[in-house]
Every structure is written in structure tokens, then in C-alpha cells.
Length: 488
Image (cartoon, one colour):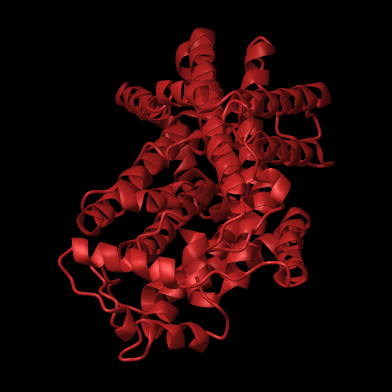
């Protein structure tokens, strides 16, 4: 719950409402996003308990589809996913901080004709400052950043819960006119369209991002076969219910026009209920929450890119070697600085805003979630005799639905706001020729480490595992060649 709940719930509602067109459709988008995340999480639970690897998506893709798929994921992670996520979080920080330092005057959306250009650039400058400062902090080493992260873990959950409580008190006090106006059945689904719903879901899905981050921790769980399904399949409905309650709270207090156009919706909410002092308190909390989330992403991202840039006898290097170097503090400063620099470029691109950055990050992230989910079916065929402590119910419906929904929201994004989504997809496609150019210089990674990890996991769960029977009586080496490319 703590990983998923972040700054997204304090910024995504306005963008979602703009794309959806009405409050009812917006709420459907939030519910649909929760369903999609739940379906995808079941695929990841089967993968994580069957092949307990700390590398997560990259290793699942490597095993199912080969080295190229894994490389393209890592490549996309550097150019789109990690820096894009950090740019979005930093933008949220900048918007809320700008609303605070401007004396409580709320900023209008970048898309509005009356938007304050000075306010927009102030928010951008603060976002750049956040990424630059946190990157430098991470270059000082893990201890400093870990202390910051631990101090902010619960704040975001408390803020979201506080909004729900304030809204309940407001409605309980007899103030029901706004809720009746915004949530009236006669107008709640005005201007409904499937592409609009898909685009609205992109904003909602951003608020759930982080749900898959528990998978790399599977090796550290004492009984992952029992704990991992509980962690994901309990926490996701809890978070989805909290998000739905927060959105209902916004709609019970604010006018729909305020929800659409405020770049600091939680400040607008608090200003209505508690005045200036409450809005300052909420803004400060959201800023701290965003800094904590951005810090966590920068910290883990830098170490991911450092790890895949190091020379390794068992795997090919997926990033340039100069990124795989630690500084005197033991921090991967080169990887951190490269990651931070690209995140800052994304913030400063012409037309860059919270909504455009969502279009850059969201569709591509879900294409890879869907690609990984589809590997469940392929790995079942490749390794039918590998013990599976958890199996997806109603297979193959679950991974198929994830793939279809991911393709749908990507098509919706390309139809309604194609620029940033297209840029991100270009980076994905560039990963293929880059991999082919590097292939002759890199030795492929064998399956042995992955199957060894699965064997160890199976024995710990009292299940016999024989790699020679991984494909129903075939040899492990034959399973590798049958995939069409050397798999992880």
C-alpha cells in the first residue's frame, strides 16, 4: 500500500476528468484502472512465485522471449520509464510548491488560455530543482537517502486518508448540494467515448504505479508462495477503494471546473474546507510526499542502470560501461547523473506538462506490463513441469485481458494526444537496432542462473524440481533453443 499510494492521487483526477468528460465516466476509469492492475498483478504473482528472481520484468522477458526483449525493456526503462516517472513526480512537486509560494493563489492548468506563464515556469524550475537536488543527494550515498525515505513513508497514506475524512465530515454536516450536482445520473456520463475512457485510465493508472515493485523483493520473503499473493491481491483492492473514496471526496466539495483546471487539486480541496492554513498544510504534505517518491525512484533507478552496466560473466552488459562505476561514496554517480539529466530534459521540453508526461510514460509502461503478463502463457508451454505455487484462475483470460486493455489505452493515447506517446514509442523501437549493433560485442546470458533460482525456490517450498524435465521431458538446453533465441 505504501509503495502504490503516492503523489498521483493528488494530481491525476483533473487530467482524468478532462479526458473522461464527466464525473461518472471518471469514476469508471478509476475502477477500470484498479481492475487492470489487479489482473496484471495476478500474472506477476505466478511469475514471481515460479521464477523468484530479483531482476523482475527483465528476467521474465529474457526467459520467455530472449535477450532482445530484455534489452529493449532495460533500454526503455532508461529513456522512458524511470526518467519519465521522475519527471512526473517532480512536476507534481513543482505545481504544489508553486501554488504555495505564490501566496496560496492556485495555479491554472497549462492548457487554459488564462494560464499564468510565470506560474508555469516557476513550477518547471522547482521541478528541475527537485530532480537536481535529489540526484546530488543520492550521489552522496545510500545512508543519506534512506533516512529521507524512511521519514516520508506514511505521509502520503495519511494525506489521502485525511482528504476522505474531511469530505465525509463536510457531507455529514449537510453540505450535499455539490455532490448532487456533480454526481447526478443525468449528467455523470455526458460526452462519453471509449477513447476518452482509455485516456482517462492512463492518468488513473499512474496513481497505481509501483504495484509491481514488490516482485524484485520476492527472494527476501520467507514464504513468497503464500505471502506474495496476499500482498498484491489484498493491497490493490485497498488502494483502489482509497482512491475511489478520495475522488468522491473531490467531487463532493469542488466544482467540476475546479477539478479539471487546478494543478494542485488537494490545495483547492483544503482551501474550500479549512481556508488558507489548511491549504498550506496539505500543499506541504504533498510536496514532501512527492519528494519522497521522487527520491525513491531516483535511488533505485540509478542502481538498476549501474547494475546492468557492470561487466558480468553470466549476462551481457545492457548499458554503456561508463555507467557501471561507483564513486568514492559507494554511489553510482554516473548512472544517477545520466538519469537525472534526461529527466530534466523531459521537464523542459516544449509543451511538457503533467498530462503530456503521462502520455509519454503511461502507455509504454503498460505495454511492457502486458508483454510481461503474456510471458505467463509462453513460459507455461516452455516449462510445463516447473512447479507453480500460484496459478492464475481462468487462464488464459487474465493475461489476454491485460494485453487487450494495454493495447486499447495505447491506441486511445495515440488518437487523442499522439506527440509524447509517439516519442516514447520511438525510443522503444530504437532499442531493437541498438541491440543488434551491440549483439556481436556481448556474450549472451544462459538459462542456468534462472533455473537454478527456481530449483532453489521449489526445494524451499517442498516441491521437487528437475531442470532436465523443464519442458515435459526435454533437456533444459533444448528448452532454450526452442524459444528461438537464447533466453534468460
